[in-house]
Length: 79
Length: 229
Image 1 (cartoon, each protein chain N blue to C red):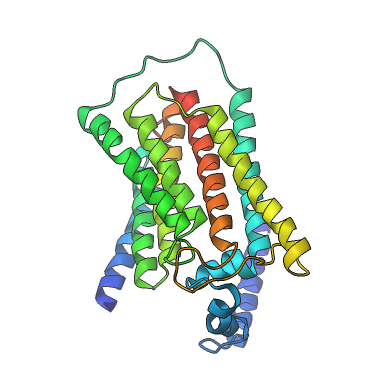
Image 2: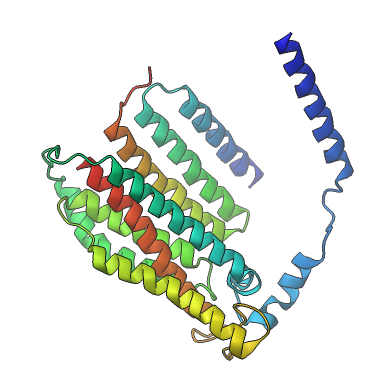
């Protein structure tokens, strides 16, 4: 259990740092979506299913969609 | 000079946070309110989901504020997007792939059903109005992605939004006059715990919140997609 949670947090940290580093904004959005998705699994493991549902539906699905639409209207690559 | 000032300021903040953290007793219950909610939440509100008994029972007025914030945010986004609209600049819409089209037709009713299930059963199982509304909004997002050209009816979404807000406010006012001495008091009979029709006004308010959040988030998606396509 503790190993799984540590692995989860490690992947989350990696994805969060990757989202900061990526010059391709679409990849950065996907990385931050991964952070939200893993955070919702973490919330479920911490016995907060209500928060997990909100995080999965809003953080992983809707926010990602809004960012992708915004990127389509502006530039894909950071200067 | 400036960087030295920044370093001194950061050091002061760090020391302040450190002192504050050592003063907090970790792992000890500091207030009794959490224990009270977990012990008498079911008896007070009739909702077997403790989170729901806090969100729509004890703290229902705060939830009304949250709904208002979401509504104002959606309205502001609509105003900003409507201000920058240029006519005659619509791009050619690419048809979606076969998988996305079929998936959207197949999943859309199931997602709607799942969202409605989440907010109708909010007082029994995890989830509630916000989560159900977000699932319903993601169902509409799937339609916007999979079947370009299809639009949410403005009349229907605005009707659902107004109906949700109106139900919430009017139920609160009825509770103020009939049930107790405060706004949004639970005046309907609580019924048997763990049954669908129980917990008084909580399921009704959660259905209202689900309609409101779903139509607000769908409105945000609709405004952004309309600009893009």
